[in-house]
Amino acid sequence: MATGDAKPTYDLEERTFEFAKSVRAFVKRLPHTISNAEDVKQVVRSSGSVGANYIESQESLSKKDFRMRARIARKEAKESRYWLRLLNTNEDEALDRERDRLIQESTELLKILSAIINKSTP
Image 1 (cartoon, one colour):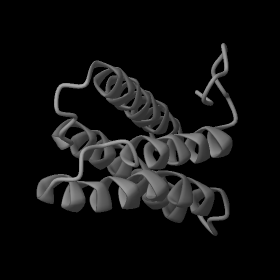
Image 2 (cartoon, rainbow, N blue to C red):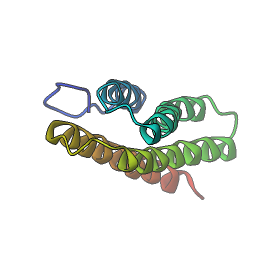
Image 3 (cartoon, rainbow, N blue to C red):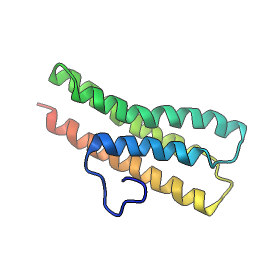
């Protein structure tokens, strides 16, 4: 879902882009700890890779290539969820709510990508 929108974004390319942007905005507000520094690097990479791999799947040369790229995008959504869960918010309620929203979005992206993969599998 795009930040501030009342309704979900159904263009998956745009939705994955908004997810990556939201993750980047979120991590800027986190406490600066050694573990957050490392985990932030990971979540920034994986959140951006969801959309990048989805875009690559749309440009694939074969069904097999399409499924592989979509599976990588799904894996990155799952990985993003993992890294988001690890981030330390120092129990800041606003940061906790934003993290929960991002975890929910990564879960929804994971489900959407799973449905796409399942429909494309012979």
